[in-house]
Length: 241
Image (cartoon, rainbow, N blue to C red; front, side, top):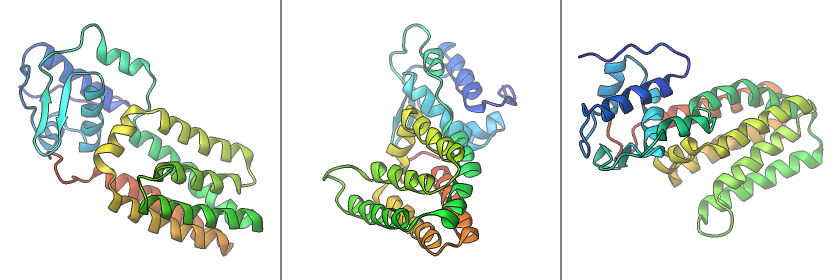
């Protein structure tokens, strides 16, 4: 029987609800392996990234177990009460929604920073970029790369003369850091090799801002955020497609 078509704005919640209902009805038995991400996306007629978000939401709420290299399985014991609804009540933003919002805000921050950053702010940005590289190379020492990644983007925002725009940028980062779904995406999809790629993208942003080139800074930041979304949609080794 084909799945009910999904057309609402919060796709991942609707998909998660349908899968949860099937689990509770026994259509996906306890301990059974779920269809692949690709098969679920075709069944619901949605993107695989929406299915990916739904599966992670179900994992957080205790309905499925993600086993890298094997598949996604229905938990042997289901949560009591309203596990999924409680997860939704935490007001978590969908990761790709947050990234889409960042794409609207951060390129303009970078462009304005290129035009208005002080010499001290440009120097701070370059220093943070070097600190991020050190964190990539020494993941077990001190703060992790995500800490410096946030500080890097915060430095770009602070170099923007529009306080409202800078505040909006950092609010999106606060939402990202509170999102358990984003944390799980990082756990599954962000590797040291991916961090190195992101660091190389930061090089273009730093160079453009330090050169005072607003057009290049805007494009470099937009490229970086679009590339993050593309990487989170890829199939890493061990993720069942």
